[in-house]
Image 1 (spheres, rainbow, N blue to C red):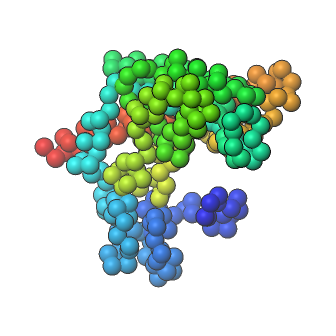
Image 2 (image 1 turned 90 degrees about the vertical axis):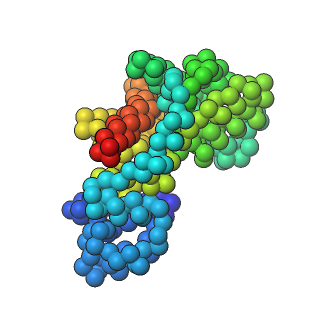
Image 3 (image 1 turned 45 degrees about the vertical axis):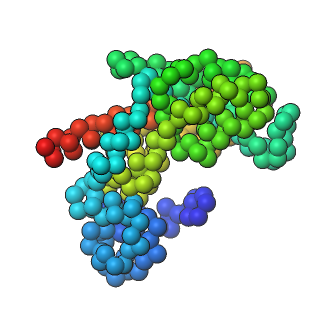
Length: 287
C-alpha cells in the first residue's frame, strides 16, 4: 500500500466486513497483523505496550472505546483562529516531466482548475471556479485574485504539499503577482490537521482521514459516488483528453471536472461545520 494502493488490494484483502474499529485500521502500527492473527479484532482489545504510542493511535484507541474522540483542549484554540469570511479552496493540476511553458522546470505542475466556496458570517455560501487548458497560468492567477476575499481565513485540505506550494511556484513564475499570491497563502489554514494529528477521530474513518473518508462521518446525504469524476487522477485524465474532444464532449468534460472540484470545497465546508457541531456537543456534555 506504500505510495499508491494496488488496484487489486480490495480483492486480495477484503476489509469490508471488518468492524470500523478493526485492529487492521490502526495507523503506523508494526504489530497489527500479528495481533489480528492472534484473534484480536478491535483496537480497544489491544495491550497498550503493543502499540507505538503515536497521537493518532491514542485517538483511535479512545474512539474504539467510546465511538469517537475529540481533544477539546487542542481543537478550541485551533478553531478560534478562523475568521470570516471563510473561504474553502481546492486546486486541480497536471504534472509535466518536460516543461512546456516559460519559467517552468522539469516536473513542475500546471494548475488548470480551482474551486472556491465563500461563507459569510451570516452563513450565506457562494461559489466561484475556474477551468482552462493550455498555458492558462496567468488567467488562473488573475481569476483567483479576483475571487478570493481580501480578508478572512482560507481553509485548504492538506495544503503544504499542494495548494500552498502551487501558489509559491506561480509566484516564482510570475513575480508581478507575488505579493497578492503571498497574501492568499499567508491566510491559509490546513483543515486536515485536526484529523492528521489525532485531535478528532471517529471509527467511521476506518484509519483514513482523506476528505472522501471524512465526508460520511459528517453527512449522510452528500457523497462523491454520484459524480462521473470521483478522484483527482480521474480529473487529470479527463483534462488531458479535453483538447482532442468534440465541442459536445468538451462541455461534458469541463462540467464534470467542475462538479468534482466543487465537491471537494463543499466537502471542506461540511467537514468544518461538522467539527463545529461536534465541539458544541462535547462542550455541552462536559458542562
